[in-house]
Image 1 (tube, one colour):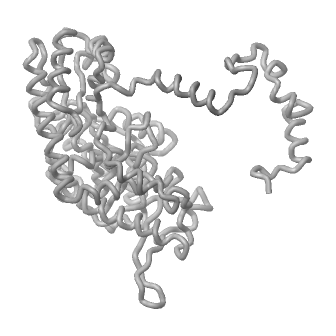
Image 2: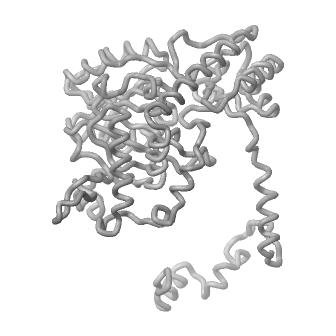
Image 3: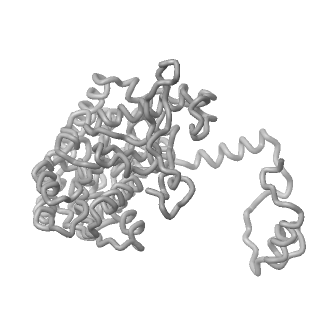
Length: 443
């Protein structure tokens, strides 16, 4: 059976509809473009050896040697080699959606273990089998709250990632929902959130640590929100939970986040891993798949997909979600990473990130004219303020081999002198000192 099963009549009708006689005519760009694009392709085909050489030349134009101090949602963490070794086994790499449990026990068990680990990590009761990425997972959480309490106002902390804010605004554009965003100054943000909680608010959205790296205990706000029937939602950096109080301990009802830091390489921006955990009250409102543990007729343990409505796959207008792509291999990477690290290793990674970030902050602010933008505590990410516009300085540091963070003027003009930096366990003392010397020279 051909991959695309169009009949000869199907093809004829399609060609007639677009006004060409044959596929040869369709491919002839000169006939369908007044100014045909030039792709600079060779006239003759290349051998395998020549293609590999050509692709290698193109790949070497990428700057893969830069020392990375950039975060903002994705981070340059160490990825143990064992993760790829396991994930690339044929049993996992070629597996399809595990609708047939009798043929998918290995994949289903891995998903179940992933869900269990994410619940333990976030302090929540239920996890789904992963989502597309951190931003879409957050929007799904907002939809869950809208469906539960039937209110229309969504209150978002201004310290939430500007990228996530844009994703939420775009995704909710045609919904009957009012999205309000507070100030992005941490103290002012907290005050505005408290004052804005009212009977019309469906959910309040917090990032922890926030986009600027600041750590805050949100328990008082969360308790106040729940008293008013408002769903508190937390977008969390999972590796920070190696050291910090969990969202579950603060009383959040839905927790989402980007799982890239759990054993997934940067990979030019994806694919990544959206995760979602929640309380048991929301279990039947969650998008995507949930794997459960059961027993077969012989009493042996087994795993199945459970708590799913047919509408999730068939009647799209009745579905809980239409962007619930399950990144199974990315979720598998996350559970392998957590299992390899173990409780002690995972905490050690967090300690290294925090201690190296503190050393980096102290080193950088010793440069004349450089200061921390906030006195609040941070995990491994912080904002420095320069005496000049940050963007040309960061560009200059790129030429010296450093990805020296994100110039925040890209998001807010009044922050044009600020840079958001992240420090992971991979960064060495020599690299941090080298960044400080390069920054001092650039200023």
